[in-house]
Amino acid sequence: MLIPLARKCFRVPRRTFLQVGGLALGGLALPQLLRAEQQSDTHRPHKSVIMVFLPGGPPHQDMIDLKPDAPANIRGEFNPIRTNVPGLNICEHLPRLARMMDKFAVIRSLVGSDGFHVSHQCVTGRSMVNQPTDGWPSLGSAIAKVRGAVDGSIPPFVGLAPKMKATDWANPGQPGFLGRAFAPITPNADGLADMALRGVTVEEFGERKQLMQKFDTLRRDLDATGAIEGADVATRRALDILTSAKLPDALDLTKEDPRLRDRYGRGSSKLVGDGAPLLNDYFLAARRLVEAGVRVVTLAYGCWDWHGRPHGTIFENARHHLPMLDRGLSALVEDLHERGLDKDVSVVVWGEFGRNPQINKDAGRDHWPGVACAILAGGGMRTGQAIGATDRLAGRVTDRPVHFQEVFATLYHNLGIDLTTTVKDNSGRPHSLVDADKKPIRELV
Image (cartoon, rainbow, N blue to C red; front, side, top):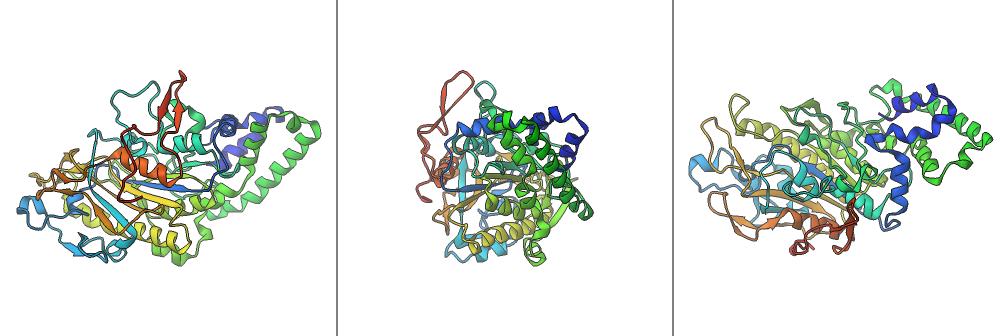
């Protein structure tokens, strides 16, 4: 939380105040971040990505690739329903998405999963095997490096995931070999669910005025002594971020019409299993963040690791999760369209792998890295279509396999980033954003 951290500044000698960057929003040293930003390719049109990670591996055959003619131990309990795109059917528990499927594209043939129970591949596009020293950078970190910040008072990369029991699912995307200057700011990583950096109660919102007055006084004192003038530009801008209201304001959902929050569904801050909460406020916060200037927002939603009893059958869990996802995701994309952001903000929803076609003895489905699914929207993409196909059991890709890195290539394309762009590791070796043979998904761009 920003405010409690900032309060600590007033308990230390003023001469040490300019070390405030070391307080590290989300682990960042702000002067380091801003120096890195100065070296980045900035001042480009503001395009953004919202990435929704579904921890645990969502069941493709129970969501967007139903097989009603398969044997009972394959097809499951759900029925497909028609969408507003002729010939494109999805699960009966996703009726809101069905009514606006022309604004979405579904990938039924996602391949290339490592099969590991981590967010790594969804946030980096890369395999965990044979990584470079310090690891691959995530999408948000790479974009922070290449594009920098839209506005010096708001970060380019924010991860909304809270702490979870499964820490590998809570990873919002790390900077890898790019270094901590390009790590995300993580306002909820302390486990708070209020979606605001400044505090957990409405009463505490009023403390901003007092805090800002203290900062203003301190700045005047520092200016009088020449301390600010003597600081380098990056440190001065770090102070600007700490005193800016933009990020806390973007996370303050009380500024939204309560009816809009109700449309999103609000949800619950309670963690689900080893995963994330079904907190639909995350979707609304993500929209507010990209509108404020954040380039990449990642969030984790629910727990989709449904092996069956004693933690509920896959169908019991899906009856709980799918309607919540349906409400939050449909509201987000509808909101983006209503605000004219649909061409500038790309949305991707996916998990680390799919689920086994065969229902196990505990009425669940086990891990299945052979094929997975993704749902995309916005970014100027050609939506209203399904890409790829699987066999009659939803276990093997029969048409148009799409690799994780092709999705990343598409996102970079939507952001206007040339795929020949490289970023250097600690040894100075350049790395491409995606492998040379991976191109944007032709059906979408």
